[in-house]
Image (cartoon, rainbow, N blue to C red; front, side):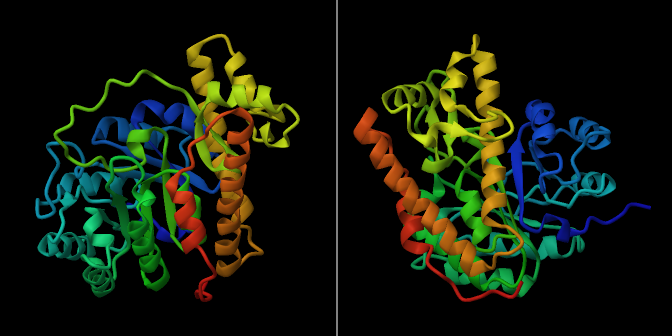
Length: 359
């Protein structure tokens, strides 16, 4: 008999969203870390292979990503029953292959929520929404009402050319949903803001291993692409992904700055410029990849410790964002301009203390 997945296992999990080709290097990083993997794409054979691996993490979600790309499904397209049963047979939470919810497509929103509610207690409704739905002047009220009316856990996927939460009204909208919702809210395809979302009550959040997995790219007439390969790593105190060459230059300009020392399980107390000293592109990329995941998991552990409540977590995250802005300004003064992500300013302004939530 198939055992139904217990959604409580996802509580406060920071998941790593990747494609199937990255599973083997993500697995050891999430082991024992209150984490798991979100597998992106529709590949049933690969999905089964991951599930039956003896070293598979306890938490695995399968995101069919039907909402993305130029040939994306629409919100009213039918769910694939075979896909639903495959996930359940493997003991995963069930994420239907739901399509994209365009601006003002209330019928599509209702369709996904109501159909997912009928799938079972282990189902989560993927809501890949246009940013209009997070705007108070748009569909935010309707979105909140429909989520509450259907009482089904949801997994948001937010749309933007870069960082969805660099738009203040979108961040304000998702925070309002998190504060008021009585059902579990998960956010997929995030970046560093995943930690802030967890601090503000997101049931779980997933950070993408690549820029393409940190948001849902809107359909545009732009040809896109064409950028050379670049290795970036997270600088923890700056809450930013930064090119490793730029990090090395900053370390050389201010070598006594303790910010450059990283204690994650990949760096083991070295200064961050060690990555650029590796002999090949592949080794540098692998080190930056592991370091960035480790830093995010460490940061989640720091801010969501068992002795904290929701107000403390919100305040701590706001303080981290405020400190990151200070550190970015300081680095820019010593080694040339570093980009200040807009999301940091928005988080600092919006991440004040909230009322205590029922834990």
